[in-house]
Length: 241
Image (cartoon, rainbow, N blue to C red; front, top):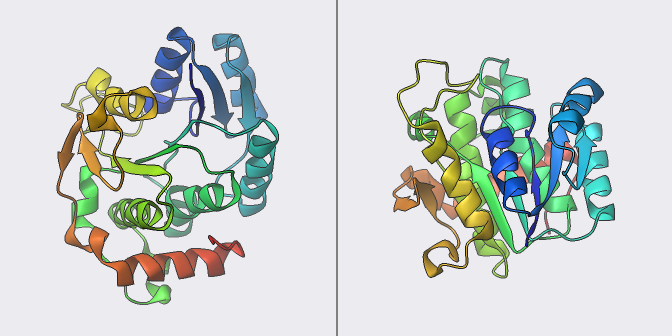
């Protein structure tokens, strides 16, 4: 039985992952953006270990949530599922990139880190200047978080850090007409978080439907990775190392 924290677990893939993991009798800590969503989760998942509340677009709330997570003890796995699509550039950067960076930096390191990427990261731009963050698109943000996943794998060799493309699935974000299978969209996160299969006990990989795929070439660029870390540190006031 694993102890697992899932961000963005009040809706979509995060909620579905939480449901399946709780059914499998894992100890799952949920996350909601506000108290209203937290109460909804409390009613839907009475067997959840705990529910943490924090708006990931708010830096101070994100830092506070990291402290509260640490008070619960070390996790076996953290699934960074939370993300936004139809928002302004600043919000997209804060939720999709800065929040997982801050939580990773401040939380006690688990054995496994899973970050939700997207095939859309292939269309992202590998920024060379910090000023370009002001025009961050969803695709850019997913390229950034995928590159950070690779950086964390390099910098934390005792932690298995992997990125997952769940596919274009019919969630609120993906839309009801999305063509991919919702169940397959959540299976890889759960597998990476809990499986003892050798194929799941790897690090620095980009997965789609439990298969390793090739990400955008910039993901492996250590110069790009280091720029992202520096920018995240400057924007958050949080040091990674």
